Amino acid sequence: MPNFSRTNLKTKVATKVSGTISDTDLSTILNDAALETLGDVDLKSMKRKSALSPNMFDDIYDYTYPTDCKSIIDIQPQIKRGRMDQWRLTTEEEFDRMKDDTRVDTWGDPIKLNRNQWLGDSLVAVSTDDFVNKLRLSRLIDDDSVTISDLDAIGTWVLFGDGTNLTADSDYYAKGSACINWDISAAGGTTAGIQNSSLTQFDITTYMTQGSVFCWAYITSATYLTNFILRIGSSSSAYYSITVTTNNEGTAFYAGWNLLRFDFVNKVATGTVDDDACDYVAIYMTKNALKISETDYRFDWLVMKRGEHYNLIYYSNYPWQSNTGTYLESSTADTNYINCDAEELKLILEKSAELGERHLRQYSNADNMLKIYMKDIAKYQSTNPSEALVLTTQYYTLDS
Image 1 (cartoon, rainbow, N blue to C red):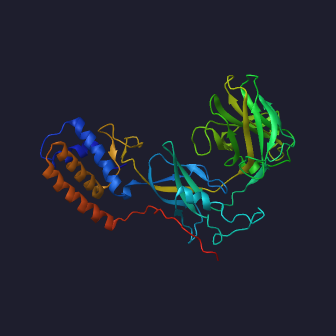
Image 2: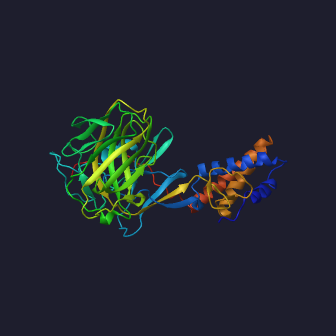
Image 3: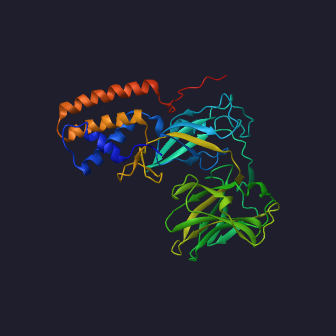
């Protein structure tokens, strides 16, 4: 727990300004000063570590971006880090171009790669859509992957619930050469999707505690869509059921391709499942009865993965925390603590004094405090340089 509460800061700031500031205004000034200081410098006390969610997987590129992440320092394997294990932060556009580069040959066949051959290895990017950030990572991972079904052909797949018009679609798919396309009928039920009771047998034993099942789902409209459910087991009466209410990166379902992730840790058993002889899967949505007569829903690439454990190391942009340890963007009570040590507190107090003098319309005093603040910022950065990854781009590639 940090050492300095908002009460401590108010007392210290009051001795630095030339007039009296109301308690409410002073609270606002302290919040503004903390955020402005974080905008100017990466404070070492703001470094945080969190387990990457989900585990890192091969061929899975989107991960949860912490809401308080200001900048990324490292993606750290929890064990067995090599000397050359480092990441490159790039733009979302370059990430998309590079993430699959040279993983297949001219004929589309997989190539056995090492990290010296693949331009898409160890790339990091952050994408932002509608004020939602996603962490994008690309790295070769030995993730113990088992493909349950490519979902490239109908085969023995049949409809589930209000699903109708089952077809194979080789024009618009996520992976492989096709996907399974289906519509929602006018029946007005509460489920719709596909199922298969005669898949080639697969073993889920080693995936039960930390494994996940991934599937691409194309959603024509997210209206009246409640969740997606995966049933996986040894028969239609002996299966595990896993429900998801968001897509893989933790955001709400949207129209278009969504990667679904079903974590075995959330499974609910029905009947007695033969874990090492599974051949049954159902993938379907739960929906409102008003969701009827819609076309061109799709499923593609049904695969199990275990992944590897990584930590995300980053600078937080939440400078406060409550007395129970919850990180906060803005302080809401005098019992909140500022996330800094004594050296860093000096910077925040100087910025608070500058803003306080501007509040009091003492602009000459404010300008003097700003000069002191900028001098101390430079001194701090010289002894505590930022560890954040620097954005780079590659404009051309020289063939070897």
